[in-house]
Length: 78
Image (cartoon, rainbow, N blue to C red):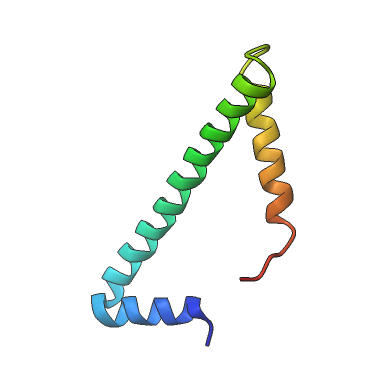
């Protein structure tokens, strides 16, 4: 099977069904906090270095999220 199935089987096997759910939620929240942090850092870089603090913060956030979305649709396989 795939590595995702293996991780799920190990977490459910070690932690039980409820523990497996907790592990999945923890991984999901870790991914979400990483995505938010990277968005803030990239947007701040765009605003300070490239836009020289002209305009608001919404434009750099939109650019960052747009580029992130575009890259996410490319279908990279690791």
